[in-house]
Image (cartoon, rainbow, N blue to C red; front, side, top):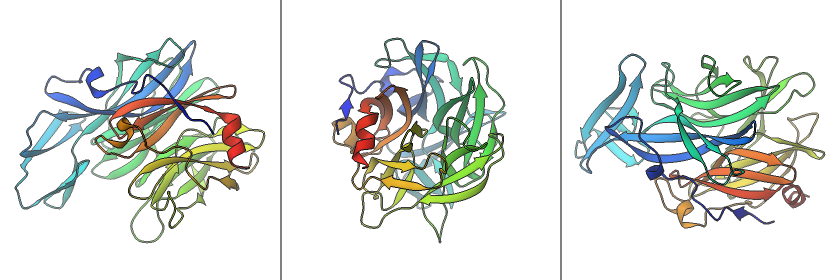
Length: 345
């Protein structure tokens, strides 16, 4: 199976973007949702920013709905600080993020190979459930309405957010459709047996794990009949966690899902195939990953050895897949739908 990475990778770097405020810097651009709108391909980028600082200080930042950005600065020698993970730190038994993310739309007029940010389309954290950021947006068009599902992060936990647009100028009010702790919400492109479906990834402490779940809804707002449909595999490349990537693709053989898996050392991509009429029924699954971090931009960065996708555009047999590399830059690759299905037989 051939994975054709775009020769122009990375498509977008932090240095390519303007920060949203003068006193912050863009640390990462990653994990874009992807969609077609009229004659253009769009990406909904996750832009992670942090305040300007030095190596001696840990800084947390969040966005208060009334006050805007708020900062906490802590000396890294403070004994009450745990800064062992570059993405988060704990201070006085409270968890903070080292960056805060918002969403930014970028457009391509050359078939999805180069993208120009549209700074009039920034979506900032706006509710009490988004104060630590909004992340990893997936986009699914259903009956002319574009549904954005994303990760809403706050001191109350990580939850599943949702809003809609029809024109990419005006957006509905945001709401939570799944409570903490949950993420990786990927909507199916149509009803199945009269109901809408989505994949999601709840997780917690103790029993269970970071598994793939399925839910159904009559209206894309109220979700129920949650079922676990795939679990991690001990000793495998997806032994620690897994979750949905892009929206599932409908094929004559079933619903094809690109998913991410991790063994704690590397994030890779694999495939699952689900029954067309019963999306809870798993028919096939990759034994080996179809794509692993091998390029320099995929192995080295803010969080190295990581490929994470939640955006794709389908054009016949061709899949244009967009992904975050090392949690730092945005890249693209071209895959063959026919070859992906053949790999599962």
